Length: 614
Ligand code: ADP
Ligand code: MG
Image 1 (tube, rainbow, N blue to C red):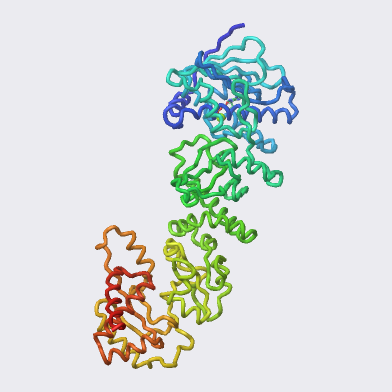
Image 2 (tube, helix red, strand yellow):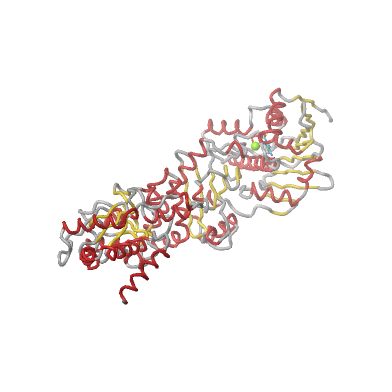
C-alpha cells in the first residue's frame, strides 16, 4: 500500500521553526548534539520499556547510535536502535509543540513512581534544529513495541510533513536523514562531524559510531560514585579533558542536591602556566547538562581568579536549549558560581589540614590567584583569608603559617596581627621596625610578595583581629634602655631642634620608644600609608611628577650612642650636627626603602668622611 498522509504543522510549529533556525542557537553545529541527545534518550527509553516488561522487537540488538556522512550525496544520517516511534508518536512528537514526547514520558514516569531514567533534553525543541542545516529531513522509525510496523516521515520544514508506511522491514529504532542545505554541506564531512561529536557528545552513555568507527571512548566519570573510581581513571580523565600530559595536582569530585543539583569533577593542573610566561590562563571547566555539553570553557561559572581550574560541572537544572549569550548572566549561573566556589575553597582548606605538604605545593604554584581573589572579590574574602600562608618571626626560615595558627599563638596582651613587608627574611629581621617585636616577643608575619601589601589592605582583619603593618604599630618597649640614654626633656628638645634643622624634609620628629639597635626610623606621616605601599604606588605611576613626595616622620632612639652624641654635637657645632642629622635621616630612609635620590646621600657622606679623616 502507498497511502501518503499529508499533515500540516501545528500553527506554533512554523513560528518555532523560525525561532530555532534563526535565533535560539548561535552555533549551527548544535543540531548534531540535539539529534544525538534524542537518540540517547530513545536508547534510555528502550531500556526502561524493556525493564517494565513490555515485549520488544529485536531484543538481541543493543541500544546504540551511529552516524553516517556522505559527502558526495550531501547527506548526514543519525541511526539509533532505541525505542522508535509509532505512527501516532511520529505525529504527536514531531508535529506538535508543547507536547514534547520526553516531557510526556517523564510525566508518565512520575505517575508510575518509577525510578529516574536519566533522560536528556526535557526542555529541548531540539529535533527542529535539524532544519538549521537540512533542506529536507526524513525520519524512518519503527517502534520497539513488538508487532508495530515502520513509518516514514518527511518534511522540508515549511508548512507540514508527509507520513507513509515504510517500504520493507525497518529495524527497531529511528533513522534520520538530513539532506543538507548548500551552505551547510560541511556537515557531510566526516572530520567535521567527528569534531562536533567529540565536543558535545563525548560522554553520552551509549556507543556512538561514525561511519562504522566508535567515537566516544571516555566515560562520564563525574556521574559515577567516588568509591568506584581508581586514581588512574581520574588521571586519565583529567588528561583527556584537560589536554595535559601531566597528572593533576589536586582533584575535587563532589555531588550536591541542594540548592542545585550538581555533579562536578574539578582539577588543579600541577603547574601554573601563567608564571611560565604562557600568558593568561583561560578557565577550562566545561558545563554539562546530563552528560551533554552546554558550554565548553564556560564563562562565569567560576570567578576569574579561579581560572586555573579544569574539569566538568554537570547540572540537570540547566536548560539544554540555552545559547551562549543567554547563558552569560543568568541568576542560575550566579548561584552555581557561588556554590562551586565556596565548595572549592572549603576543599582547599581541608586539604591544607589533611595534607599540608600537598597544600604547600598548591600554594607555591597558585598563591597569586588566591591573592587576586582577596583583592578583587569581596564575596569570598573570609574563606580566602584562611588560605594564605606567610613566613613568621616565630618559625624558622622557609616554614609558613596560616593566619588562624598565628591567632592561636597570640598572647593575651597582643591585640593585633602584625605584618612586615621586606625583600627577604634577612632584611625583615634586620629591619628597625622589627626591633620592638623582637624585644617583646610578639610574632610578626614576614611578607615578601609585593602583592601582599594589597592583600593586607583588603583583608583588613582576620577572626576579629586587625592586620597591622609593623611600622604602623603603636608599640613601646617594655623596658626602654636607661643607661646613658637621653632623659625625656633632653630627647624632646633634641627632637625639636632636629625638626628645625631638617626643615621640610620631615613632617615631624619625635622620640621613639620602640627602637633597640637603630638610631632612627622614618614612618610615613599618612596614617594609612606604609613605606612599601608608597614604593609600589610610585612604581605604578608613569609620571614622576604625579606623586607628591612622601611626608615622613622621623623617630629617634634616645638610647642610641649616635643620638646621644648628636645632642652634644649640636650644642658645639650646629652646622656639623645638621649634616649628621641629614645622614641619620638618609639612613633611616634607606632602611625603609624610600630613598629617592641616593646621589644626594653620597655627597653628604663624602663631606662627613672628609671631616673624619681631617
Ligand atoms: P525533546 O527531546 O526535548 O523532547 P525534541 O524536539 O528534541 O524535544 O524531540 C521531540 C520528541 O520527538 C522527543 O521527545 C521524542 O519523543 C521524539 N523523538 C525525537 N527523536 C527521536 C528518536 N531518535 N527516537 C525516538 N523518539 C524521538
Ligand atoms: Mg531533544
